[in-house]
Length: 226
Image 1 (cartoon, one colour):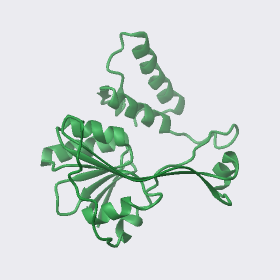
Image 2: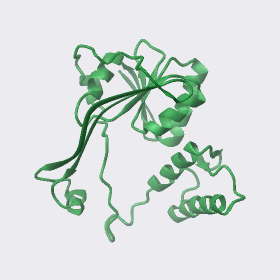
Image 3: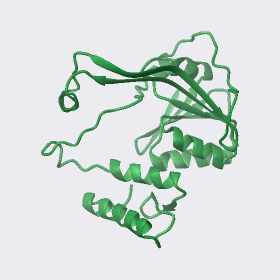
Image 4: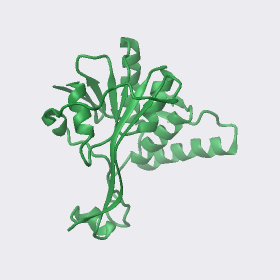
């Protein structure tokens, strides 16, 4: 297994399709969206977007398919742009700590979990136009060892709370990344200087406000670029 890291984004090579499917059936695994066979140019495009938006990406062993970890909406948009089928895999189990969320955010300790939603294993397939279709990857397979992918410690969620006076001195570009992802989904324009997706237009009041918000965040944290 080869792990390539750029800007904190991991591109993992040589995870088998069978291992990915089996791992996706486990509780607390992240979601995976598999995009069908890519050409070399298409793969480079997906890698470029993954780096820009800080997405974890799997290159599936012995195929020309890739899987994006979490971020289903972005994966679906990429597949639609590239005119590719895709398949979404996720064990939909949502829990919250039984303790106070602020205490959990500070200590990462809870004496139990409360189940909010349990819809079991979800498989959704889409055609090249983003319309739902019958699944084209068979997920009814025998269990295989998932040691390789388990080592990557992917999460399906995290809890993040901003608490006044706690960690306020730490610079963070998380908000900028989320805005960049939002603008990518809404056909935004990639700003080469900032390495960030900006609003598609700046003529409307919303476009101006969205543009100014990003610029203020860059200045606030002292970042010239993502």
